[in-house]
Image (tube, rainbow, N blue to C red):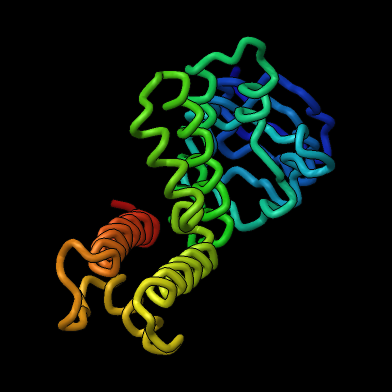
Length: 248
């Protein structure tokens, strides 16, 4: 479909099938594109999307963007914050039975849009769609029965929201430190502040032991367990935050 330079200002394109359409230079100012199919569509830096409605009234109103070519289109003029989820994700979740390839396409659509937004300095908007991509990828791994990746994805989600919910990391850190401090307090006959110090050093692998403790003592076993958990959490945090901020 060739719509290069088309004047579509304020047009009602609700649920329009524009898959693969050439929209280079098209005027889509204030156009209603809710639930429109824009997969494989071609845009350019001359395409005007000012105030275009790409979804927002409900979580089921988003347009679909998988494999769209943005071509330098100015994305800052779109109210991305109002878009709850992309149409690609909505289509994937509405199918029964669920089909893995639809979830792969939805994850790809969110990831591609995130990269396009990040290239234009729209970091907060990009982060939100990158987060959605991670959630959808987890579903893909479940359908593919890649259980280790699936479980590790759940772990990263709960620990730090894939790096996009850093507050969870602080909560997990405090929970583990205080939990193991309670264990040291119960088994070690220590003052509460001494148990807290032992827990902190054990978590970070410093191996703080009193001379009366032997490797087989409960306190030594607890310290070793906390050190292993601490190492896993630190590795996970480094991996998620490196992926988020450096795109590796």
